[in-house]
Structure formats: C-alpha cells, structure tokens
Length: 157
Image (cartoon, rainbow, N blue to C red):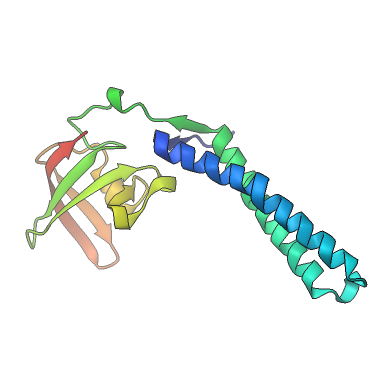
C-alpha cells in the first residue's frame, strides 16, 4: 500500500509542473542526446552515450517517483482544519522558553518544506513537537544539542 502524501493546492501544482517538465522537455532532450551519441559510432567507448543513458535512468527514476507521489496525493482542505491546535497548514508562533526568542513557522507536508520561507515539515523534529499542541502549551523539542522548550503563543489559519 502506498503512502498518502498531503499537499496544498500550490504544492500539488508544483508537483504536476515538474512531472510535465520531465515528460515534455527532459525526456525528449535526453533521447535526442542518446541518438546523437549513437550516431558517433562505437558505443563501448562512447562516454557521451553512457553519460546520456545514466542521465536517462536517473530522470526516469525521478519521474516514476513523482508520478507515484501524484497518484497518492491529496489536497488539504484548510477550511476543515481545527484552528485551536497546531496542525498541518497552521501558522504557529513559538517562543523559546529559555531565551525568549520568537519564531513563526507554517507547518506543511514534507514535500513543501522550505526553511527560507519558514515552512517546516510536520515530520521534522520541530514540526512533530508542535503537532496537536494548543495555545499556551509547551512543546519539548529534542535536538542534537538537547531538549528545547517552546511555548505556543499564536496559531493562525
């Protein structure tokens, strides 16, 4: 049984766009490269041919993985999310209990995580620690440097 992957509308569209790009742009380009390498003669010593075949294998593996992910994708309906608890798509503001530093993150599926955009995976240590917590709760996050306590000071969305 395949694992269900949850996406926002934006994340699902990004996945579809990547599949489309690989099928319509990369696959034909690689096939053309292989054809040109074959035209150069002896394949046993043709580095271009072997490199193109390897690239083709990697691209087809990636495409297969993405198509499987797409087949098992579900879009998250944020109108049905409990806004009193930190759940996927929640925007959570936390305060480090020890030093008072405040951080705000959006909890997202692993495929949509991007720390630069302050989008963290629900499967990350911080994401796991925040999931299900309510306003005022203390989340104990285990890190390589030890356990850090964060207070949930705001949940939106």
